[in-house]
Image (cartoon, rainbow, N blue to C red; front, side):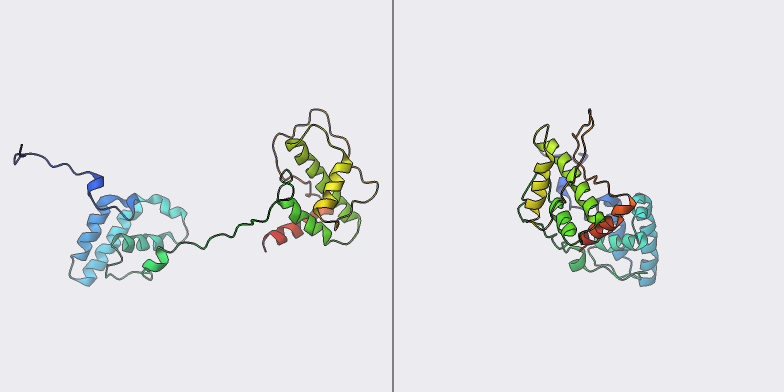
Length: 221
């Protein structure tokens, strides 16, 4: 049955061109297309500024970004398919740069020697091993051992001896970190819960400020 002249044709988004910047909608796309039809370049540039203001009102979240005004102009050129000859207060975006993918972040694929302690333990042991023997280094080892005991109790069983933790320190450091004789971790208070893993080594006091600075600096390399 043929459609009559009075039949209303319905259009669906699946039947039309995909929007490059859907946050601005098809109204802005039509405004940009009309910009291209303006022959006078000065008037076309003037109308482009008006379109940018409309885009700003439709996408107020853009104000939370740095250089938000430049981003609006970049979005204008992207919507126009980079084919828009107007005077812009900023350099026109280049498609190759806009569409380029960020460099992949290199992942550390080195196997973790003790998963229940985590990968950071190896970095901390490297830092401690580089420190000269001193009371400060002993405190570092003690704080690290307390944290390792906490992680051990989370993932393994209800009790663990200090000797086991000390052996793990020397084993994971490949003998570069020696636990001082007579070092004690103290007893665990009754009712203490280790249900939530977290790196809380207690290095906020003055004695361990150097450790904090060193570990943060190492992590930035």
